[in-house]
Amino acid sequence: MEERRHTSMHYERELQEVKNGLIYVGALTEKAIRSAMESLLERDSDLARQVVAGDDQIDAIDMELEEKCIRLLALRQPAARDLRFITTAIKINGHLERIGDMAVNIAQKAIILNEEPQLKPYIDLPRMADITREMIKESLDALVNEDTGLADRVRHAENTVDSLNDQIFRELLTFMMEDPRTIHRAILIMQISKNLERIADHAKGIADMVIYMVTGESVRHQFPAETETESP
Amino acid sequence: MINNGIINNKIIEVRDVHFYYGGFKALTDVTMDFEKNKVTALIGPSGCGKSTLLRLLNRMNDLIDGTRVEGRVLFEGENIYDPHVDPVEVRRRIGMVFQKPNPFPKSIFSNITYGPRLSGMTRRDELGALAEQSLRRAVLWDEVKDILSQSAMMLSGGQQQRLCIARALAMKPDILLMDEPTSALDPISTAKIEELIEDLKKTYTIIIVTHNMQQAARVSDYTGFFYIGKLIEYNATEKIFTKPDVKQTEDYITGRFG
Image 1 (cartoon, rainbow over the protein chains, first blue to last red):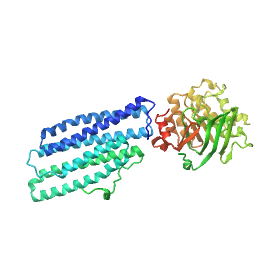
Image 2 (image 1 turned 90 degrees about the vertical axis):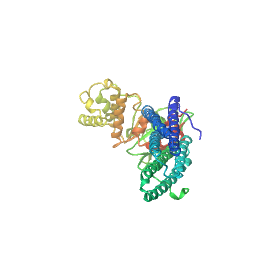
Image 3 (image 1 turned 30 degrees about the horizontal axis):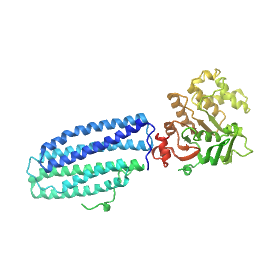
């Protein structure tokens, strides 16, 4: 459907700035996850420290976007689609900021793990990271294109990430039972896996809000059926 | 979407109404129900027909030459445009408050008692009790109880508007029609009138025309959106302002119009 523009061009521009800001933070968080994982896989602790330092920028934009949204609420008294967009933007902004924090957590665990010999080859973790990054990207594409179908796909992808997390947990449990000297490293890897699983939760949260923004229906706290997921 | 289905306790039913000012068609095929003891807001850009519809509901348009109504307006089941219906009686039961406060250049007391006197109430004590009751209901009593004999023209704009509401209430109407009742008032007086509307709906049915979108959102239970003489959407106010069914409504309330 063709979208009419606001009579006030200034208002139109402010709304667009918020949208652009979200896409920018989204790109920063995707990059943070990629670098955090790379620092683990390539045993590159300098890169991990860059991820930790880079979170300041994400936090700064988070504050700036929230302020913009509050100003729009106060000064423009938005209604209908604009109201749904701004409330959605505030929540998505919060999700992205948390995703940034999780990437930092992963990088910090990588720094510790890099000090010790590698416990096992990493196979499922990079897959999880790829899926979660794709979920973030697609949830924001869904926001830009108001695409509920894509948002729904993101919501389903979360199940795959959950299964991978369970699988990693079981696998590490066997390592720890066989040799208690692996416990420290295994727990760190589990925490990384858990952080990726939480990132997927946040990406699902973004997709939920996109569906609310487009349809006005709240699908939060509703979980897509397991059967519809591809097996990990 | 014209969602008349949400109206349970109908006090007015507008049926297939077309309205003309001479050759100009101001309303086309309007059908809508109004719920008793609720506030209904009529919104839309200038010239959309919302004030025309409001004035139609108590035959105020009869006073304009060359106008013509087609269709029916049922008030408690009876068509107010039936030839045997007395328009004066219609206007007594369906009162009106206008955009600009229009007190008579008389005392505050006389403003309130003017209508009741004309309709035969003469006893001073009765008139006094009615004045007090009406002024209390309009939340003006405490401000004017000691100056009832002074001219209404010395009151502030907001007080004058509440006086006009009290004057309408003195006729003991069932319905109050309000045509942009706060557009000439400052924010504090506006807030007082909005507060008053909230109180009054316990006793009266209120239909309000407003250009102030936030006001419609704040005070009304139902909202009708008009555009070029047609009712485009009629829905619960909360629905209209969060997820309207019709794109034209959304474009209007979000400022994407014209």
